[in-house]
Image (cartoon, rainbow, N blue to C red):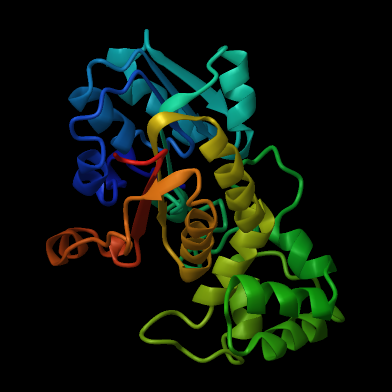
Length: 298
């Protein structure tokens, strides 16, 4: 198995993220998608006044790497293995009623994409897994081999916005009558002749996106997190989300709009990476960042 360098992951929209906290006095902060701790490390460097930095990640490998990368601040950093949906539990455990900043980066990390065994990428033949948290039970293999045709159609249409969702579901069901679909290559073999290439992307890009979202319940998790997040922000505290596809961005945009009695939207339009960042990091191209603040500026 090829080793994946932890240095390959590049934090997206790092400087714009820091700019939202410029001049802020941050005592407590929650990072719900710690990853390799790129955003966390940069924020801790710029804000030595931080007394408590709370971070979590569903991926144990990422959490271990983050712990190493944040060693300089280990006395003020508290880490949890789990989902950002449980942020209220982490804060309660630390007797922290509110925080001055909340942030999640919803993109799948380069460590996960470049893993040859996790099943997130169609570049490698791997088991159909796609679990962010490997302690979860449901895998992409379970969905592909046990969900009904209508359920598969729903996933591909709603979570992947795949135009040929009916054809994809039908081809999977037809193959399942003869054999199980166990690996990423099995799924590619079933669908590559059915789905068309889209704007230079692999024909299965949207199907893989849909399966990952379904396995990890990503959209429902995001909605639950946002509802909890604004409740646990201190006055003038800021909440930010980086998303990588329209479904997530739409949820954040609509949530902020629907809660304007509690928050001030700081991004009328989402912040996107500039040309230079996109040249340096192709995976940043679809990133969008939105921020809001608890309360109103006078």
